[in-house]
Image (cartoon, rainbow, N blue to C red; front, top):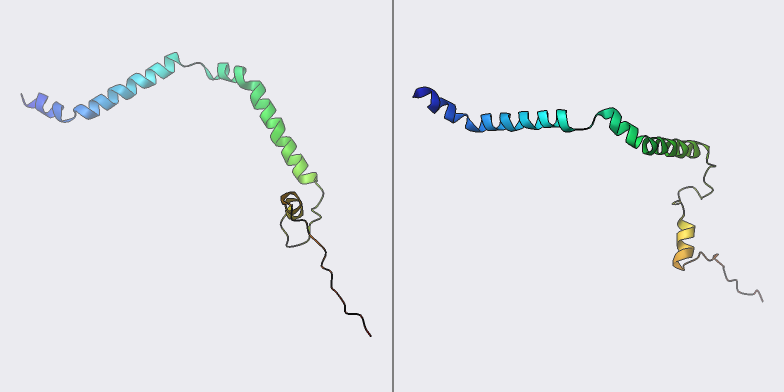
Length: 97
């Protein structure tokens, strides 16, 4: 009578181990093989790799920025699009008499 009472203390651990075992066995026998997944998705993997390679190449070979030092990139374009183009500062001089 003592052994079933002690086993009953660990009922949640046994249940967890059973569920984990059944899940792993089901995944092992029912899931598709890795090569099957790779054969299905290889065009996606290849195109993503080529795109990332192109991003790296264009990032390394792009010309340096022509913005003023200390300015944010594209700030002039954003001002123009927002309707606030830069106006040159014009100083007005009083005519000398």
